[in-house]
Image 1 (cartoon, rainbow, N blue to C red):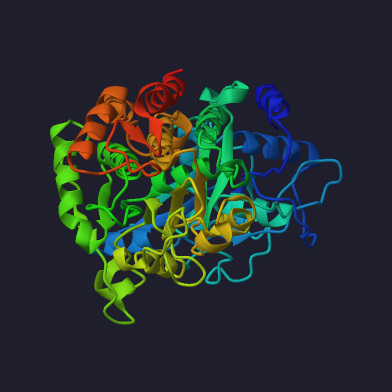
Image 2: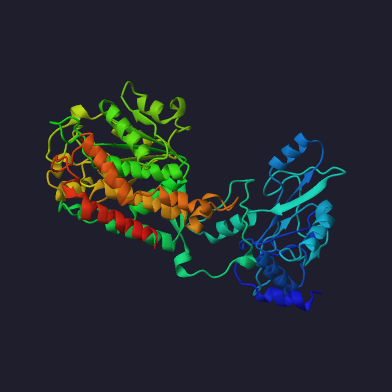
Length: 550
């Protein structure tokens, strides 16, 4: 008979999918937690309904199921045994007592029952032992054929080991037919340092949000509602149209958030920039693009990710000087590797993006293009004035096209006029609403498209968004799979890597000295895209930083 305390604790727990814990000394005989309700055959006899209800409820409170394994022999044998999937059996107790919460039962071998009973008594908080069945009660016919895992061959001297398992949760998911669920790979249980008793109701801004960031493979990420809203505000800030070019028609909602979530999961990132719009000058590059690219690279360095940049072969010397100056100015903590791409044969893209051209071993997880000349539908490259500048542009677009067929590699395009690499997602809107859009619209899509009034602003916003994600406790915890310690002590290091008015002012002066001109006016003044740095670009940087630090 169960004690009053156990009955009280059982009734106090929340309802839902339940499981009953049932240890047996017979061939079938033991254990069951949190499993989705399912129909089954009526076996011989069962415990009385009332105790079964309490058993189920108390098991739900624990929210665990155990698997067992045995250890014996030398180190190599023990390691091999631990790598196997332990045996789990499924019984048929579900829906046998109308009006009571019940569940299927997972059974362990009778030789483990005594050890498991001791284990439960030693851990009676999360694992209260509420019932122990008799041998043969649940009708498992052949213990060499478990429902899950590998059969266990027992020998004298075996040491039983019990640990948490996710099979119960997966059964519940299967039976509930939920449209989205997070599970673990076989043998790779999710372990968290949070206890149920320590979980309290969160304010709405701390509630986790789930966002899809990849379809191949299917990949979701998690972020707090508060952090997500901050990043959405950044996207709104940079979406103004100071040049009155009609970019409001190109805006894609939540693309900054999803792009940065994807980059946050990346190990290695490649950044492409360079738009030689001023074909009559040397150098022909404009000063929108490199500052934003360097702002992204600086934060990626602070986050200890691998980062490289790619640009046109003819502009390598110029961009190398810009990178060196960025290190001197304190924007970058060290030089970023600078690459160029040339098409030599059909395998050039794979050889560039993957180790030995093997698409299963990509060198980069994410490709970013910011104010990078994009290929139009006719195969040419155009500036905003509809001038063909193809002779100045290397086919870096091919890398983004190839990435579409490499599982696990994502791409982002940042632009402000529709003729930039990655803007293919909004090409119809470009053709309709942007001057000369029917000719200049980029035809190459990126997975994520970020549209800004000035492309540099998109780079600044991305840097700020990556900082927000890194300081979001929910996202940071998800990244490390709740294993290890939080990285928040590095917060000041990350903050120092963000763009600032002083750093960007010095960088723009350096670009002017190197002969890099404003995109719209070709002026060698303190302006970008014809907009003055002071009170326009500087003000945007201040607004972005203000949102970050709120």
